Image 1 (cartoon, one colour):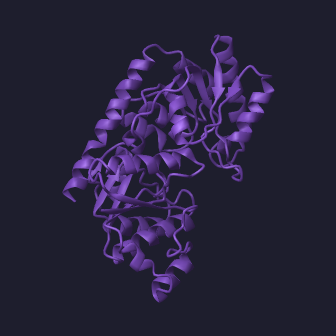
Image 2 (cartoon, one colour):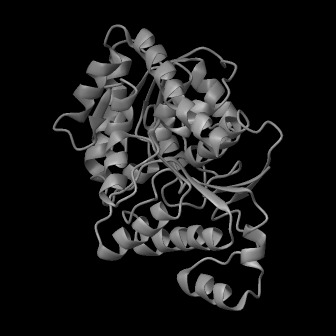
Image 3 (cartoon, one colour):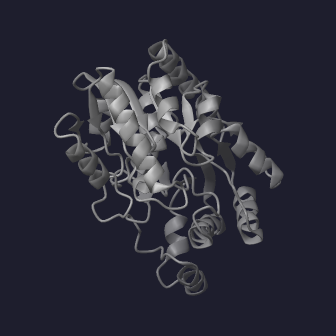
Length: 355
């Protein structure tokens, strides 16, 4: 059994993307223990598959690079769309590239499954047309929340199952050193842009730090996007914040996904604006307070029974986060959410076994 995991991998500096890759492999090995896996992602581009609409169409017409032959060598394309990129939210070029690769894999005769992911929003006519085609060409479609399942149904291809995020398929880590609060500061929001006002987010993060310190809690900053060349990397924001507190808060830059999950499993609480920082926490049974900057957060968290989610544009973001952080019963609720997330992935294993 040869499986191509598309749009996730095991080496991305974005640990959320890496979690999708690891979750995919660990989950699919429950069905096919001896499967061979290959990855395809923006930093793991196979030489047979060019990026960009014009290049992909040219290769489809000429076959110079052998794209269709290469795609036909897999038994299954496991299309993750990076978890949240099956949408035109990040621009039509990205949506088009991913959709064309999906289409050409179908033309190569390879079975395709849309892995558990957010479906939509699609705000353009072209975006909806591409999505409809991808859904129709998929042997299996898994939505990781009910809102995504509804989006698929509106496009004429109901999801085969409503599941949860692939992070709940990752094997459990050994807990690392005991820590109190791990705070993930998102470089995406720290720099500002369409998702949040930078000054408001920075002020809220500082208020959260001040509130936790005044309550006698210890804080370790945990970057979750580690790319030193990316504008939205978390590391500079974490270092800037730590410097402002003169050693009163620590920073732990994880070496890799395993290190991050070990650190998270050893913590009492995670607070974060990167969704997979929070999901990595809940998948290990560690409570997490999420600062949600997009539609993808709340439906997914609701589906596993977790309501510790605060919109990043909330009137008093810091106060709401601190209220959740001090709420009773967090540990027990997190274990229940972990179990629910794992249970929701069982239909994936069943459907794939039938496939």
